[in-house]
Image 1 (cartoon, helix red, strand yellow):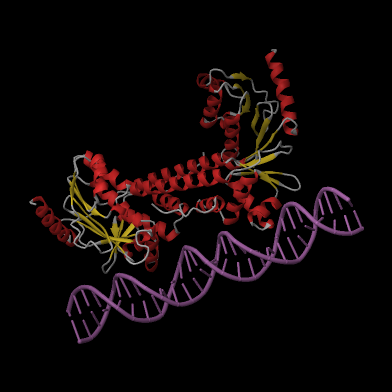
Image 2 (cartoon, each protein chain N blue to C red; image 1 turned 30 degrees about the vertical axis):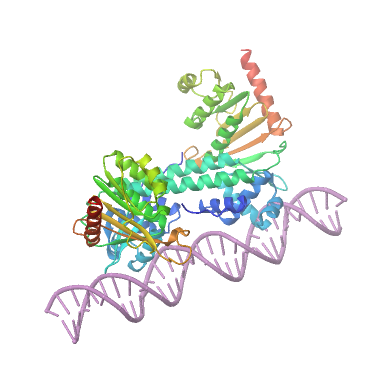
Amino acid sequence: MRSTPPKDPETDAIEQLERFGLSAYAARTFVALASLGTGTARDVSQVSEVPRTRVYDAVEELQEWGLVDVRQSSPKEFWVISAETTCRRFERDFQHRTDALRTALSELEPVEQRAEQRGVWTVNGQAAVTDRVLEFFAAAEEEIVYMTIEDLLIEDVIDALSEAAKRGVSIKLGGVSSDVQERVQEEIPGATMFESLWVWSDTPAGRLMMVDGRKTLVSALVNGESASVTDPRSETAIWGEGDANSLVVVLKAIFTWRLDTIDSD
Amino acid sequence: MRSTPPKDPETDAIEQLERFGLSAYAARTFVALASLGTGTARDVSQVSEVPRTRVYDAVEELQEWGLVDVRQSSPKEFWVISAETTCRRFERDFQHRTDALRTALSELEPVEQRAEQRGVWTVNGQAAVTDRVLEFFAAAEEEIVYMTIEDLLIEDVIDALSEAAKRGVSIKLGGVSSDVQERVQEEIPGATMFESLWVWSDTPAGRLMMVDGRKTLVSALVNGESASVTDPRSETAIWGEGDANSLVVVLKAIFTWRLDTIDSD
DNA sequence: TTCGTTGTCACCCACTTAGTGACTACATGT
DNA sequence: ACATGTAGTCACTAAGTGGGTGACAACGAA
């Protein structure tokens, strides 16, 4: 999904550690120690580009995370826990945090049910759009119509469709090339395929989705010129819900008409 | 382990979200929207104590996380994804990150094997100490001697001991009260128990550990006066590795002598 | 004693972010 | 059309954080 630029392992590890909340110095120090196994402030400083005088701060930070132990001698020596232990520690830590978040959110959720929506909501970024699509698929009860270019028919989407199909939701898929069609037919036997009713075949097209005839989503790839499909941020979608919703009305009309036409072909 | 003060759900949720990298405003905005389901900047501002004029920034931030969609109207309206979806999203995100970290760390690990350690390393904080203990247990090959007060003989430790026992490691446990002894006997049938050779029974004692006769750890609870066991930060340990290690030599002597004495009782 | 090393501090600068207010565009009712 | 309150944008301040650098005293080995 998100294309991780394959840099050297050090930079990569440092980046990840920073995202976990470590300071840049702490992250660099950790990686240096991870390669050294054990070392003094000067060792770390030379390997990691961290100013020697700040290694001590960094180590202190790492100590608070329980990732590094210190040997009280002169010069001080620093010791890191193993890579595997580090990862497990982060995993455990994070599990706690998500659990806490889940609890807290569910405890405050005494909300009035969402009312009928009249407007149109917008989503930016391919990841977010896919997320929304998956969420809607998961809530589908009767029918899913989904049309897209192949690049956006990724694993997750197929899985979600397959899940829905198992629940007895009727699936109608459009716009996929014949080779992908075969694969889809295997995974989702009940799916109906229809030819790209892509009137706008050349436009920087994204997706067209309708669920249960009352929830619709349209996306487009902006910057049609440059690296469009490459950049995951370039997709923008709008969606709407409810029988009276304007976007729903329009898309339902289009879909119904086209699908009827195709049916009678 | 870490005692989470049970505040109201909102504060709790906000705190967690901030730890995930959201700004305070974004976190508060999200929680407000989570209770409202949908709302305008003013709605959010009133519920969340976020200045109205900054709700827009906050929403933008949330949009980049894919947590909120915007309805382009006047007034703008904001929509949040469900609590469950939010949590799953964080979990997925985090899984990717730990995977990336694990890959990066393992790729750079061409390290010279840790040399024999001569010094003594120190660890602070109960969580970190337990972590170290578990790591050493996991690496044990022949024998584990572990002595502690009951409060520090928690689930994780017992599990790790049990794991080791299954690998054929001989377990010797000391200092546990009789009621806990029963439970341990059930979980780790092969374990040998010995009476608290706690010569220093009244001292703010922590743990005493020896693995394979060549890796030892001692911990103590500082601030013996005040809330000692309550505060997880109050434990400090030192450990050492290697046959020539001074701490190892001393502890090995003590343990061997005491255990021999007990054996011959 | 001397000199290089080690550890601690203090400082600066850039950047982020919480918090506030000015100002324009807009929508509504009269 | 006008007036008034609301909505959205932008600019600004203040505080805190974190990267980066240097001063300096304590230490250790020749």
